Length: 410
Image 1 (cartoon, rainbow, N blue to C red):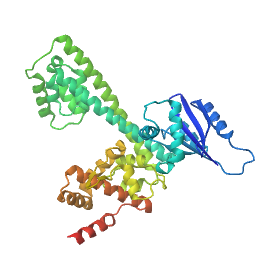
Image 2: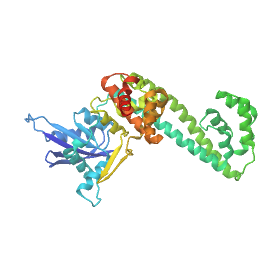
Image 3: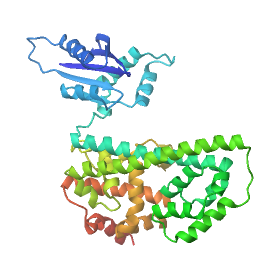
Image 4: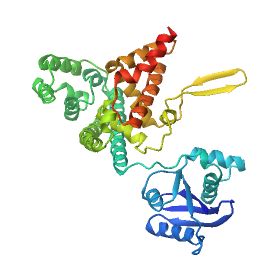
């Protein structure tokens, strides 16, 4: 017996529809988030399972997320859960109507239809271990803090360029602790020009800078150079925003460092950590990010191609008639593709095979970015092989086949 559930979730409730395998609607309800709602869902499903029915029952759920206690409770109940991209749901809805009408109950119906008719095209929620899930939570939080830091740095730089460009010229690294200290002490042109030699030198010493006298003189000269100015009240308003950004950046820097320790601790406990760390270009942080986004479900990727497609490193081909083009994938997991791109770049300096592969792509006419994408795609395949066999990376083994093909072509 097969029961299909479409679950359109919101922050505080779920619209669900229950269907049988013929598409007949068996029930529809709006359930509250939490234990009460889950109990009602179980009761709703149980009401359509006969007590004397010896036929095994399989419950399949379609929902637009793979995270949260609700999804974990569905999996724990033994239901097969498919996390479906909202874009796929929208496109599927258009197959049956072009009016543009949309409702939560209608989306629940669409999700139930999708797992009934098209689940062979969908990907079930991966059965990752609790430790892999913990690594994902920590690494995503760490990376989000880094992205937030970059945003606030850009805002700080923009504010300085708007009213105090001398500071942007004097300080080469706005994220450095000594620069943040000086900006907090003197966030406007007047107070910055009044900074003494010892104040600047003390900040540089605290950050363990070299050539303190030379750097002090350079900073002081830049801050005291003639410049265009804004009215005092406007400059004061900008100074307040600078101090706010400095405070935020100081906190972010401390939390990024603390969260990095958590990433290292969680990643180090994972049984696949050694395999990830052995890959060229992958250290602890990048290795943890790649593990987090790939997960550790051994059955998730049937082959290296499946892992490459999920990573978004493999190209896509568009062909119509005599026209055929090969393009990079632009729909992908941003966190994973970012980590794999950094790995490919770092591998150039640590792996002769990676460098040779990159250079060969460029010799064929590929640009640097395209060559890096192809290298990243190749490294994903190598990682898949290592994980499948449970072995660490070996330079000769990884590139032996490619090197042989290159020699034959030559």
